Length: 275
Image 1 (cartoon, rainbow, N blue to C red):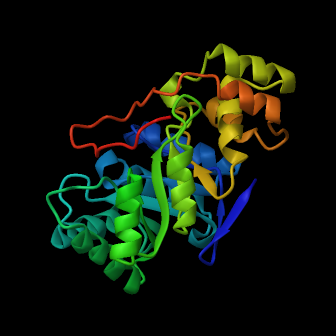
Image 2: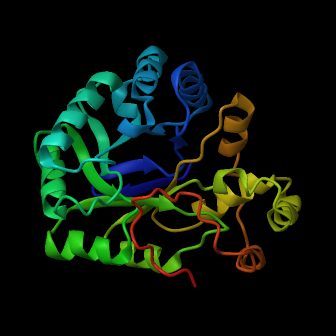
């Protein structure tokens, strides 16, 4: 396992994403992942699976402090009152009195940013979360959060994979002292049969999805949270620490189309241009 040390935390770079799993499917996936060796779990209030995640964590018997747990809030309403209410409910469902990371899930124009970030900071001050961060923030939004409102952000989680490469967003996050967390790192399944990724994988006896995962792991200060509903898929996603991509591999990936954004809600921000 690769680990990233940031703001006093030592976090597994590879985590388990849980969207859009719910109920027993989500419970089973989290239990399998923990059995395999995952110790970084990502969920959200809007995923409607925090209860399943919480039960799986509790039933695993693994000490809470050995798992890095992320949840997210404020996808629809970002007022301070709503953040506090949502987050309290999330902690109850997750069967814990704290999370390691609380994210402002999507930027919402209806609520001033400083109000939402202030609510997250209050949760951190109360030791209900150890770190705070944001999701789907553009370069300008990250700058506003850090340079105007002085937010102490741990990460910015946004879509990133070989078919949606965003080096300028990544570089600005790192300049601002923010790590990157890549969601949908297998491009919501579109990387599975990609011939370029398959060709690269053939050099190492790996699959196209494993190449997509390794591509992220080779970056500095970058986490990723792929998901699978199958135990064998979780095993395969975890079996990526015995090889590394070379310059030729990365150059081949740069030839791929770079416009396959899968996460497009009606309230999306004005995304940064893709080069």
